Length: 380
Image (cartoon, rainbow, N blue to C red; front, side, top):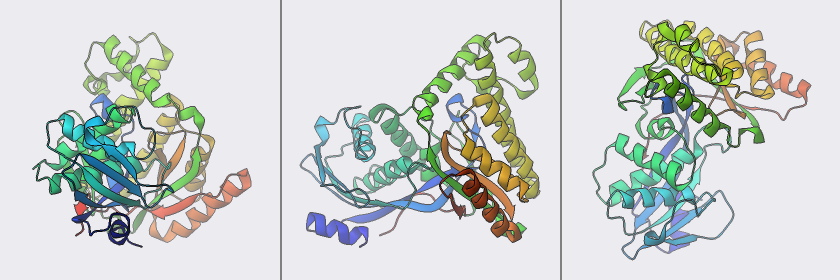
């Protein structure tokens, strides 16, 4: 049953519209967004889809086709941050963020369904937030731009759901373009669409979902964010974005704490890796980005220390089987990796990774191509 039909069955009337917002995978630039640095995500074909109608009585009704349970009914004037820990916190948080910003959202009925894998580091929560924000923006004729919707969705996740993420995930979901990777400057939120037609070069980008999420990740994101902020404070800059790559060694020598040094080294070097990848893509030398992806993984593994045995195994097995490069992507401690491969080698690399997981006693990974898809949009 589609979301339109599901909406009608739940609420007894047709929705006023149907919207979609994608998940994302990040090509390069990890833990750089909250340091006002650079990131390069692309939207996935996997989307959260919402059938929505507006209400005028202050009632918000939410239902997910993917999670067993009744319709969640809330009042928009009683929404309070950090009081809801279920999936409903993400769309409810968007309503709260819109109203907190002075937008006259007086209620809505939503029925949601998503094909974005949860727990895989592919921004399933951002997709829920952005699809809700776009639908309400259209239905209430708020006139907000895509970057503005992304910021409101980020506020919903930060302040309402209590997850201290940067703005990359929501911006990718809201703003990505088909066939392109998004270069986002997280300082001024300027965006640039960089062509990323891998098939024209005989290449594919694979996403390998390790299907694991380690408890070690709980609270680790916030700890590393705090460590980065401490590094910036000790170096006398507002954010690590202000530390030039050419001056990195000197900056590190001024940091007494080994942990903070590692975090700073990762962030500054990953910003530099983003700039190198952009230059290579614009020069048409797509294959040459492979080693940079692998370098990024080493930095995430050794300096940021957010990898795990399963993600390390994806990278080592893929590269040993002929991949051009690979790295973990997302928040870490599980989730997914990206692997750049020759199109002719997709089956070989997939088989090698799958067999390596079986030999190690891990659950079989899920492997699928990352084809750069469109950002959030109205379907009907």
